[in-house]
Amino acid sequence: MRITGLRSFMTCDRDRPRVIVALDTDEGITGWGECYNHGPDRALPPLLDYLYHQLEGEDPTRIERLVLKLLQQARFPPGALGLAAISAIDHALWDISAKSLNVPVYRLLGGHVRERVRVYLGIYTAPEPEVLSDHCEAMRSEFGITAFKLSPYRVDIHANPWGRVVSSTTGWVAKLKDICPDDLEFAFDAHAKLFEPWQAVDLGNALAPFYPLFYEEPMRPENIEAWGDLKARLRVPLATGESLYSRFEFNRLMQCHGADIIQPDICAVGGLLEMRKIAAIAEAHHVTVAPHNPMGPLATAINLHFCAAQPNFKILEYRLPTGPAYHSNGIEADPNRASYVADPYLPEDGYLELRPNRPGWGIEIDEDYLKTDRYVHWERKLPIRPDGSYGYT
Image (cartoon, rainbow, N blue to C red; front, side, top):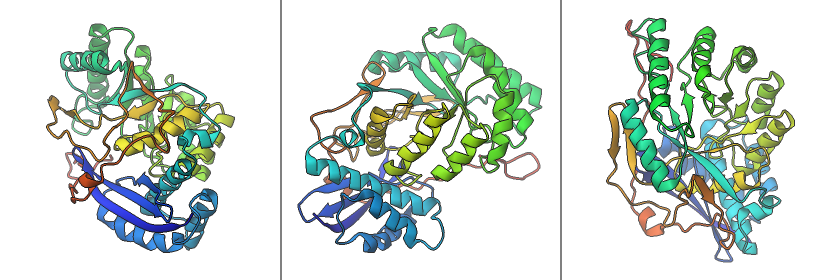
């Protein structure tokens, strides 16, 4: 079997752009993958076309060899866009390999160590407790989800005294915990907004009495060694890693004891192959893996196979392929019900069930949906401090 073509598609998943990749073969088997959307997403199709020249005519089942070839063809280690493109190609190679044997991808990873994969729902904002409680109950009633990720910020952290920032957070969480059933778990994503480490420590320890599922990325990731000092001073589980790109960076993080939970992104680190290597390093340090996955339904399918086979997996971030959108003033319905995945994985009793009789990723791609360019522009909203400078995000 040989690779005969690469097709990329600009599409969307609700309000976010997505870049989807198809690899075609001379045996009629097509593999599918998803790039991480870093922002300049229209830069990815020409990059993918360039990388295809390294793949044309190759055997798609030699995944390690081909990924190494793509990495080594770059004069310097690839950055965010390069690894996002390689990630999608890696996904497609795994999909082809499993389909050629008529087995799920997780069967190629040593088989599944668990029967199903627990998910938490990313909400990312901090709605009023009553609104949030109602929504959590609705999600538990429909999907059985009992874990949710929120923002810890209730006021502008740049325009308010720090004491007010912390007290508004703790008051809000206390009320939330009071009105919600005690079997619901909440994680808090600080979105790397805190430049000063003492603030990251202070906010995390203020959340400690509420036993959060984890406290995510309170400060910038570049100074990896600083995370060791941060974790040593915290009384909550510290999670980070969505902004790291390779096993070498995660190895440094492990060496300085900088996380209780790592969050690599399978669409950003170079794909499933690199993800497994990262997770193995974490396992050797008694650290669990909760993959970063604010992505589309194809990425969720890919993550499912990784999680099914990974011994030190903890919980998977999940974003409904259709449904509610979250805003600071509450939760609104999303009218867009269509998707490029015809049969997405949906939670049952808070878990994603495996599909042992479905080869590859276990889903069907709606190519008719992909034929129309559905690209939507999206960019981060940068906070502006009172003095006019930009804050971190």
